[in-house]
Structures are given as structure tokens and as C-alpha cells.
Image 1 (tube, rainbow, N blue to C red):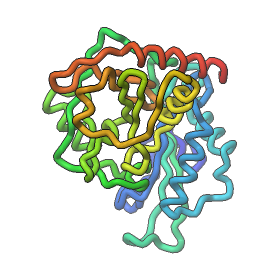
Image 2 (tube, one colour):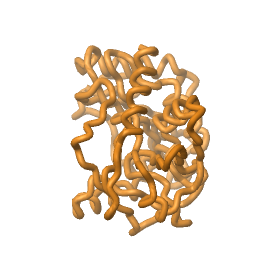
Image 3 (cartoon, rainbow, N blue to C red):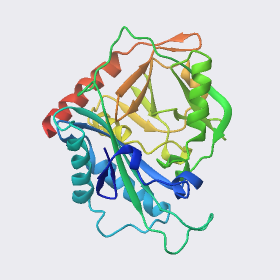
Length: 284
């Protein structure tokens, strides 16, 4: 069952048509959520990112789109799919409905839909025995700026980059912007560790305003022995790093074990996962 504007319907009756603006023009936003035992991880951060993104997209935010309303709709959908006492991956999609060409019709109304699927791991963990190889994706480049960082339905680079990674036996690829700075992975934010210095690209470079990125920066800021910087990362820095890791809400932290001829450890990432899980347990 999926949730379409508050109504629970069968997937075969989703009510999404070929005229939907999210389908026609990518005029839609989404949040990917992890829900464990009825608890939405980092829900407040997801909610405020969605509201900020809707404002950037000049969507008229409905009056009923409160944090409490959308949380209730998410949990209602989780429950009807028998996942309330389990771990689930949830996608909350918001679009501008139907009507108009590039310019939306004045009568368009904001729709939302929610879909769920089971997910195995309730908390975050790192299997140090698993290899994870990446390379740069250089066929196309992202534009610097906050628009590139929106969680929108326009994910062409991520789609064709994922196909490229599969064709070349990589687990993931790192994306460059038009300034040739490394901004993120195909499915998450990038962190670089060199000694006591931690770097992650700034939002202005075009990377996703990741919810897990925010959690990492919060945890890292509490360690007085670390120097944390949001700054551009050049491809030349990657092979000089001690560790590289990717973050997203579903998997938490994914250490990169190999980039070209360089191999990396994961000790720092392992310590971060422990702190992240400890933070989550306090909020449950």
C-alpha cells in the first residue's frame, strides 16, 4: 500500500498519471527516510530540509504540511505495510500536481505520496571485511550552487553515473562540479580524513545538503582534537587521504577501501559509527 495525499491505496492504483509534473519535468522533491520501530531517524532535519527545498522551488506549501501531520502520514503508511515494529526505508515525495508546461498552471496543487519497503539493518554498522571501490565520474559535471544540492527528482547524473559504475565494476563513483572539485558520491556526501583534519565539500560547491552530513558535522564538532573544515576538495587530495567515507541516512557511514591504486583503512569511520549509534539510542 502507498499513501497518496493521505489516502492509502494499492500500488496499482497510485493515481499518478503521465501529466504529473514530477514525471514530466522533474518538478518534485523527495526525502529518503529510515524508520525503525516507529521512530523516524532525524525527522526534524528531514522536515526542515524539505520545507526549505520547497521554498527554493517556489512551491506553495500547504497549511496542513506541519511536521506532526507528515510524521503521522509516514507512520500510518509504515503501519499499513506491517513495518511499524521493524526497520523500513521510506520515500516521501512531494510534487506540484498536474497542469501547465514549464510554467505551472495557477490551479496546480501540491501532492504528496509515501512508499515503504523493508530494510534489514535497524542501526548502523561497518563490516571491515567488505571492500568498496570508487572512481571519479567524469562524463558529466554538476553545477556549483544550492540548486544542485536539492533532493529533487532530477537525478540524471546519479542515474547514468550508477550505470557507469556497474559497467566498470565500481561500487560507487565520486561526482565533480564544473570547477573540477569533488563534491559527493552518487548516493551520499563525502568526507576526507588526513591526520587530525577532516574535510567535506561546502554546500556552495553543489553537494547535497545531507541529513547524515549534518549529523556527522555535529558529532565531529564536539571533538576538540579535530580540525573540521567545509572546503573544496580537489581530485589530487583523494590519494593523499588516510580515509575516505560516504554518508547517507540509510547506510550511515560507508568507508571507501580503494580509489585507483590507493587503499584506505576505516578506523576513524568505525569510531564515528559508534558515536552515531550512541546518539540515536539516546533519542529513541
